[in-house]
Length: 212
Image (cartoon, rainbow, N blue to C red; front, side, top):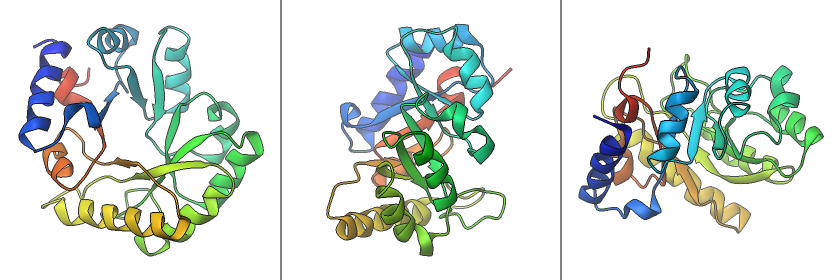
């Protein structure tokens, strides 16, 4: 199936989950794919492209016009200078140390705070118990737009997704402002994420098929 056909199927599944497809942003995860697949995503109506590694993303930025780039992989502080202002949204802010490093480059960077609601050691993200403090602290330095998380490696991800939504709601109360983006749901669990309130999906294989 083409990317456009897969997107049509996914949008129908968003509707079946009781959500309006126009209110759910799809980030097409192009990591591991070449510039041609990035352009195929754009042609299908997917302007938001997600990359895990800063250097891979920067190389594609030079080849692909018209995309809005998201960093969805862990950002190391030694890559901050390269990443700042290149990405529309850095989805993986997980410490004040990283927030301060980004703020030294720009105060306009839009970010999501990544929360390890799966509570798995191999996943990055701030501990759920510390997430609201990080949102509050980072908001004084950067433009925090919401929260991001990955579901657990095994089992039902719904409790983790619902916890992220609760943390977002509590953070909004503390800040007194909206945090509109809940980035949760990948190719294997996005229907459950939608039912838990996701506003942004990060989809790779469900759009493009297996990575080369």
